[in-house]
Length: 92
Image (cartoon, rainbow, N blue to C red):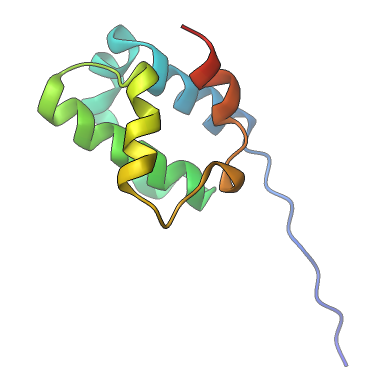
């Protein structure tokens, strides 16, 4: 029976990009037109990046603290899926 191996994905760069998308309207404004979601290897980060893009299309702002309400609207996805968001939400 073959052994299953887990592939470890380093999401450090993706996490930094997502933090910028959440916290900085200036960064989001520059990056938004060039985002290619297929480059995200972490599916949770990709999903949140899509939510942020939707938010930006409506308000032309980074969500900052509003990321919490975005998560509330998407009940199938919880903070436990993505603990990186804790520091993003706690910073103002």
